[in-house]
Length: 246
Image (cartoon, rainbow, N blue to C red):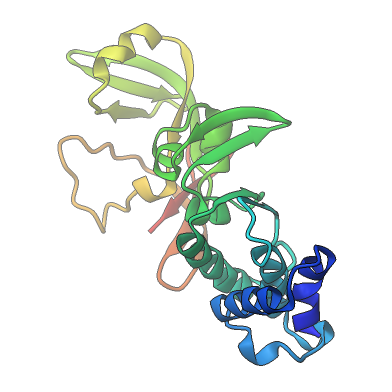
């Protein structure tokens, strides 16, 4: 039964029966499994089986949890439910959890601090918002975000007091940011400009401002996602289409 499954590790430690019962009861209440204790594992849903596996670890009162892609075999709905379960569990237990995943949504929603790795090498360690807004390199910028960041090759040039990024096809993008003083070190070099899909806007939706750059692009594909859509745009001189989220 589920009770025996969760209590097995404690029995091996020869803990008192009352202590075992108390720990299993605490874990099952925490994971909403009280009504499932007499069932066999094969009678449970995928999400319930994952909760039983969590309960088996919780009853041991570990100082650190290690999760190695625990949600990879669940469908999208169950993954969403289990992300919530894990987040609330961490808040209740106040225990360190090391969570390994290839799913960036899981990393961004569950992590207080994220380590991004590529072929075994650490690329960046930071809070989720820092990873997203200030990626250390192109790999991190491409990996975090859905859809991924758009990359445009070109050169940075100064026009009067302003800086512009000249694309391979000849279009120019005005650059406006608080770190303008750092642009001089990269003038006239071959560079890559990264733009998040949500930072592109259709001219019919967002009024142009003095700092807005307008580019003419051709719509290739539109993916409807319900409350938003992804628009794939071709731009002269660029082999890969840009993705706009709107």
